[in-house]
Every structure is written in structure tokens, then in C-alpha cells.
Picture 1 (cartoon, rainbow, N blue to C red):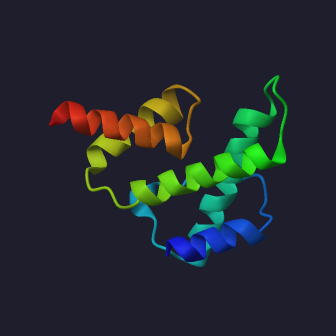
Picture 2 (picture 1 turned 90 degrees about the vertical axis):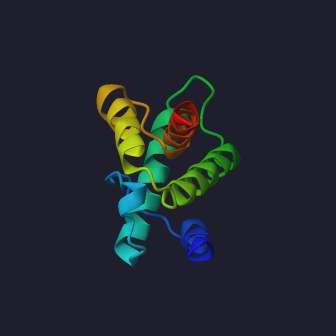
Length: 114
């Protein structure tokens, strides 16, 4: 699955307006793959291309890959309540809704609960 996502990620130019895909609800369908990749691309562009640093294509692709990797890891997690809380806090309360941030928050909350 990861290989097909990476392949799709590398060759597709997807629309900018995409919906957030909950990693634990990802079903692997082509539609959800495209939606997740499109969300990652548009979110990365929103987060980094509008900054004073500008929009370096190589940097953006590397950040998109990091977000895709975080999405894949999150899709394999098993504590939905902790991930849902992270999504609520970082996607609904503050505008920091990228998969890397969600993975960091999820991991910290898992460690805190152990």
C-alpha cells in the first residue's frame, strides 16, 4: 500500500481543494488515496508557500513526503480516541492540521498515558 501511495504521490498533479482524510478511517481506495494526497499537497503549500521563506519545489516535495509518511503511520495506529482528540485540537481549534503535527501530538499523548 505504501508503495502505491508513493507512486501515486510522485506522478499525480491533483486539485488543490481536498478534504482531510482521517488516517484510521482510510480504506485504501483510489478515491481516498487521491483525496489524501491532494490534501497533503494543498496543506503543505498553504503552510509553507505563503511564508516569507517562499516556496522551494524540492523542499515542498520533501515536506509532502514527510506528511505522507506520517499519514501512513497514523493509519496503523489503534487508539482512535487519542487521535480524534489531536484532530479536534489541531484541525478544529487551531489551524495546524497536518499529519506530521497530528502524529507528534498522538505520540506524545500515547507516551503520557503509558
